Image (cartoon, rainbow, N blue to C red; front, side, top):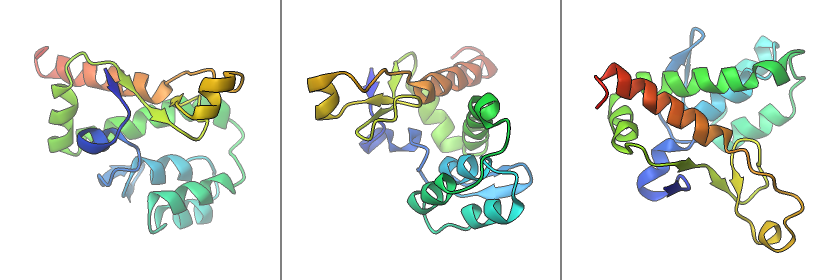
Length: 154
């Protein structure tokens, strides 16, 4: 089990610098692309694309007017971004494949229970806030499986 995307597994994190082309634009990170896709406003998308780092892109993404169908398409957008990230960055694609069949857990401390698994002290004590989905980990494992199949199942 890979429980958190730090140190040698930092490349699995959406904020890892791994430029890729998506929907006709170059993105520095998955965070940049995903946050920009939350809105249909091209000016807001551009601001997010040009954000100096993933944290700034995330904060800008929290303030945009959400596209009407965002709740229906957000998982698909995340999947597309993850696929593009690893398709276009051979070194980290190989590293992802080398995780073999490890369970990938997107551990966090900020109550992101949709994309990850919250590991904060409060949740462990009170256990009333967090219901873990680990959608990011699941998407990464699905993408990994797809790349393994493309490589002949290795």
